[in-house]
Length: 313
Ligand SMILES: Nc1nc2c([nH]c(=O)n2[C@H]2C[C@H](O)[C@@H](COP(=O)(O)OP(=O)(O)OP(=O)(O)O)O2)c(=O)[nH]1
Image (cartoon, rainbow, N blue to C red; front, side, top):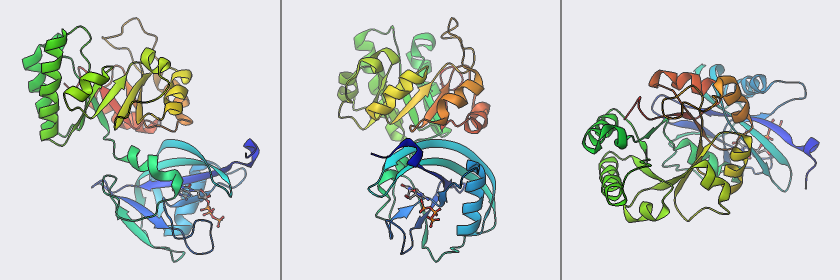
């Protein structure tokens, strides 16, 4: 066991090009885990800010000047040689062409098809998180009607939507089965993934990709079902902690702004959202009263992306 004061703080960069590829570097000889692939970055010096460390490391290692970086996930991991707290940033704009300043090998990769190995052991969940798209849509067929809802989902898929949750609280069982099956068929045609709210059995029956757990169900879970994608709804630190403990694929944190579907709920606001997300190891979608144009605000506050109901489908 490492004492909390011995935990090494690290700033790591997911340097992302517009096509979605990101840069990996191979650890040079002489370092622990030499030959393993990692995200460029390094140790934060005492009294140095995370962002300063990120800028310094990328200049030293790659010769690039960071122009725009978003805070992303924070992950603690214990190696035999050290315990590290990895603060990941997504670097989306920089000046200069990355060039290995320390003789390290570099490689641009895509999250759904990483072709270099081995990766540093702490990074497997990071790659899975990078494979999640920025927008998560939640269906609203009980309000729109099934036909219109499917039409709107198809339009959103055509416009690039790649993650959908079927959440139809009051729908009768048979109708829900048919609707969920239609959404899965439609989404898979576009290479998109579908999660079913609450119902693990329905998820399996309709061939969906995952389950989305409401917060009450999340707090009663002792382990995840053996399903690829598991998401959960959270509203506070306790629920986020439980989602991390179970190893959810991602969470939705809500409500950030006032929303029609939960008018009685107290909103978090962006500052509280950022505070809750800061230490979270899971990718977090902001939810509640958001529109497409709020995506950048979510990124600036540490979110992975945004989840929406009425504003998208
Ligand atoms: N840069 C980076 N480090 C990572 C990643 N994943 C991961 O577990 N680590 C760990 C490995 C190391 O224990 C620690 C980073 O320390 P480092 O030795 O690379 O730091 P540094 O570049 O400042 O190196 P040095 O001054 O000690 O030579 O974080 C990652 O993706 N990127």
